[in-house]
Image (tube, rainbow, N blue to C red; front, top):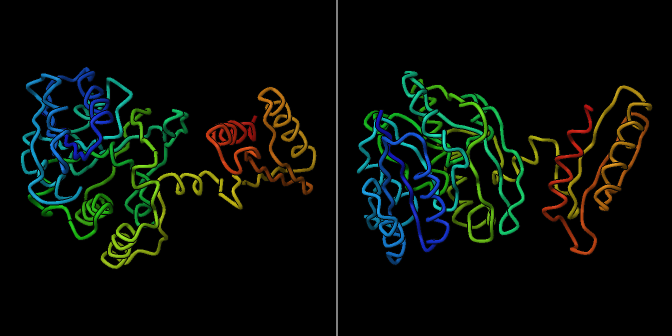
Length: 314
């Protein structure tokens, strides 16, 4: 089973090298990677400098990320096309092995859970959500760098929709669902989705991205609101950002259960010397994590929010 990894890139050679090294570390050896540079050519130099004949690098034949992906797809030779963004990476050397084993499942496309990584600090949040053709009409819970599908999909469905910009991946996913393909979730966590100031997760309401989202909604008749993977993750896990704080309500069977949870949170807060706001309303507890000195939410708050949620069922 031969797999092709497609990587669009633009002016992020340090990130790109990390992404490619995660491909080079894969236990599955029957792959090639196509890097398409949408910038000044630095990505081509960085990719070829790794000295692996399986890595090809070339300039974008069009303009923008979607055209870069399409340029790579046109040169894919693998039976399976595997997406990887230049600032993401695979943290499991068995990732491609799982894809190769699953590829025999006909009528499917594939994805996997992983982590949201907040850079430069490097703190992680588990991102591991289900996806069905029904749920994908509300939220795209598939990390872009985990998406893989038969190369023949493009012969059947055509190219990426360049008019949708960064939403071309969600559009392709919905088109595959409409054509009868089923999302197949691979086991375990393996994909690191980087969040930093220079990627689209930091600019969810940027005009170009908003236009792409509106185009997606109109094309597929969706009833949804715009999210980044980060804000969607907060919503799906019950956390929301309210007035610069991570907020969530926890419901228990009775007052005793609520207070037991508060006591567990108190132990966590004392051990970490970082304390949330807590409200108790009989069997309901509202937590708010934030950092006063930072004037808002920090990576530490995100970590402790995730840890405190796990204490709700302790």
